[in-house]
Structures are given as structure tokens and as C-alpha cells.
Image 1 (cartoon, one colour):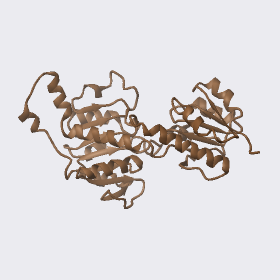
Image 2 (cartoon, helix red, strand yellow; image 1 turned 60 degrees about the vertical axis):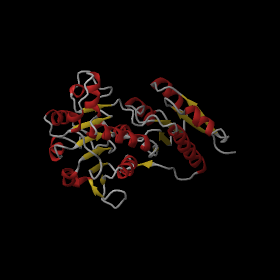
Image 3 (tube, rainbow, N blue to C red; image 1 turned 90 degrees about the vertical axis):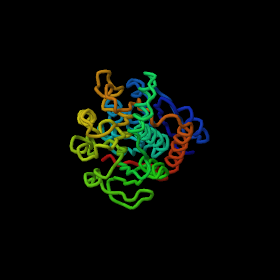
Image 4 (cartoon, helix red, strand yellow; image 1 turned 90 degrees about the horizontal axis):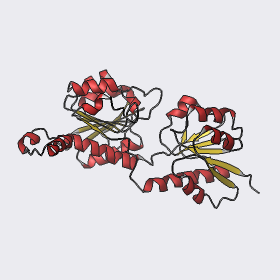
Length: 324
């Protein structure tokens, strides 16, 4: 008989679906638990696997994983981000996997929505609606188009590639920015991150979707915004800490860039005193880019189930991350 495997699942949503998907594995038990330290400590004492996400992998949970889970061999994140695992570390011999590009399609759609809204002056029109003010000529003077504009996709993983495909369908020229340079259509070219300043002046729109890691925090600051065209817009669907928020506010106030569409922030929820709320060239969305696609939970369940089967049969896991 196969060795019994205990999986502890700590998610807001997805544990029931994973349990049902793994019902055929006789030697697998899945225990669903809340993200509180006391419950997790008790459940992880004899657990082989932890299924959770980056947000729940706090310092407290990392401490339990390091010192109170002697059998733990694998952690599956249902998130794409994994910066907390990098910050708090993993126990020796524990493999970390994530959700891969599951969230990329809805996030890419959200990024394009923010970009289109900025270029087509939707915030300006909405302010006019609230005042019952109809001014075609004045509004038309500020409109722009994506056709033949240059998009700089800073971060050319799953989200960046999905944005590039959508941007190309609007007739945009796409330049990707990634850790290493490469050829990857539909981008005209993908340059290395160290070349960011060489390509920023070309961009009519910058879309940021880098992962948040120690070496990407604060990628955009005063120098980067100064390198952009005054007519360019900035969209961030990555993580708030990728950006020096004070530098962004100043660039927007001084019209050194034309506008910003933001779904992520340094502090979330965005504090009421944050000056971003008061700027008329900013679109604020409440970190919802990855939501709204019914297929996401189905795909997450499929990733989890496939990796569970791989784990119990000794095959290599998918989406393995290096946080050494």
C-alpha cells in the first residue's frame, strides 16, 4: 500500500475543489484549515504538503514551517507571486511551486482596460457626466489612439505576453523587458531589464508586471519617470512595491507623464490620505485584475491536482520556483 500523504489546504477558496479533484487518490488526505497560527501549527505537525498562497505565507507561518513541520516536503502556492517565500524563506528540502500563468488572461484584460481608459480619456468624460457637461470639441482635443503607439511591457512573463498579444491586435508596436533579452513575438524585441533606460523614451505606454523580488523592488522611481515621454501613460498590474509611489505622485502632479492606471499599491487597501486619490490623471482600481474569470478556479484546481499526482508518483512538479 502506498505511503499515506497529508495535505493541509489553507486558502480563501479552492480547498473543496482540490479535495474533490484528488478523491481518487486513496493514500491522500486533505485537511482544510483557517490561516491562523494555532490551527496551522496543529495541522502541520504531521503534514507532507501545504497548499496556500503568498499572502498567507506570513512570518508566523514560515516559522511553523521551519520548526514545527518535520515531514513537510512541498508547498503549493495558488498565487503567482512568491515574494513572501523569498523574504521568510523555506525549510531545507521543501520545494515551492506556484500557479504559473493562471491569472494572466484576466490581468492582461484589466491592464488593457486601464490603458484604453487613459488613452480615450474615460476619466475626463466621467467627470463631465457627473457635471452633466457635454463638450465634444474640448474632449476630442485630448483623445489619443493605441494604433501605431509603442507599448513597453516591463515584465514579459505570462501577463506581459498576454498583454502583448492584445496590444498587437490594437495595432501597437510592442517592446518587452525581461531579465534576459530574447526574441519572442508578438514583441518586436525583448530587451534585458538592465536596458530599461534605453527603451523607456520610446514608449507611449508602459505596462508593469514584474514579479516583486528583492532585486525588482523600486524598479520605477524618479529616474524612470523622467525618462518617459510627457505624453506617455503608466499602468501597473504587478505589485505596488515595484514603484516609488512618492516619485509617481510627483510625476503625475507635474505632468511629467500623462497619466497612470493602477491596480496595485504600496499599502493596500489604499489609505484615504494617499494623494493618488486626489489626482485627476489617475485611475484607481482595487487590486482586482486577477478576478472575474470563472475559468481561473478550474485551472488552479487542475494545477493542484496534477502536482499532487506528480508528488505521490515521484514525478517532477510543475512551476517549481527557486527562492534560494
